[in-house]
Length: 316
Length: 227
Ligand SMILES: [Fe+2]
Ligand SMILES: [Fe+2]
Image (cartoon, rainbow over all chains, first blue to last red; front, side, top):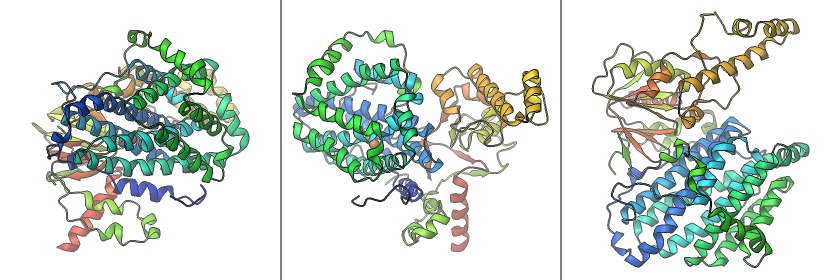
């Protein structure tokens, strides 16, 4: 992925075909294969909250692609997003299956309860997800994918010696490489559009209460995860590199720099990784604190997409 | 690897083909992925068939599965509906020949007439048609996420629209499951979709407009050649 193919020449049809050819299934993996015994009780205890978070990030990411699919610029890209939506679900399912393998789920195998910030993100996506403008969502997703791919997954693989986990993540990483490639090509396509449309899409369509809602929901969500993961031993340098990659790949494009949301999110990402930045003291930390008092019941029941996760490779 | 595709993989189908020829036959590469052990029913083969005790997968775009599922659920033990793309479904109503004009005039008589005069009857019809379809969906399906899965991304009228008859009621049956994940392979024991799960079934019904049709035809051809 070193070329600077412009959006006009990028072959989304060929990419869609590659995506179809590279499909894999939980049933391809031998979940009983040896290696689980390499997981010490300490490691299991440390990894359990990490994996639970990871499952929910993938699952919320899946919902993000579902929203993107409704506003894709072409029907091929819509179909690609449909696959990505499913693949993120597959990642969440596979990570759940790993948790099951390592005895991290209770007897009935139920999905770990998401924290309040994840619950708020789910509520926001249910209420506004499909009305968010394409540019904002299409920019946010590659940022999260860079962080996920570059920092979280690498951390996990450094810590976990189980070969089955490595086999699973060979598949996941190969999927993610395609996600990131497409994410940035779509930014190129959007960035090549007329400027007035970019400006209107960025700010014009958003109601102030939605903007405020997004800040209240996503700022503490990301900060809480950031701190949790650093506390677990993820070197901050890795986080820094992962976010730098967002700027590097985005910078290779010809048109991406014309997207206002790209600059906003790049700047925000820089603040998030720099723990000494006033952003944390004045905005993120207080929001983490405030949201921790939000009772889950005020959010109501989430939509039924949150009930579709499964660790079972086979359903009948 | 259990449950792998049973048809020998013609790896040349995707591997040796050049990029250009691949673009003209976009689904050829998935031909190696059809290896279902049970019957694959096409066209009208599902009609009048007794599915007693069987788990059935119905695969196709929204309007086509909507026509088939109500009959299948009448006898089948379980039905999984693999919806490839949501399509607009009009509420069952007066048998007006076409939606063009008639519905708009029935429901919003003055608007319909004004629209006719102004020569914008088409767009008004589409607007009204979409409204009626949405309202019908909202009234018939309780679950918000299921409604979202059943709502097309395209505007109403971009394709011909069918009438919903007993489909929503079939979906509400506890023996019926709506799956919107893309199907990428038929394996020995069932259907594999991109969320990573293998759905075990006894019979597969593939509609005429299904994206799997090209794949199935390629498989037929290669089977004929190997005979
Ligand atoms: Fe993922
Ligand atoms: Fe991804």
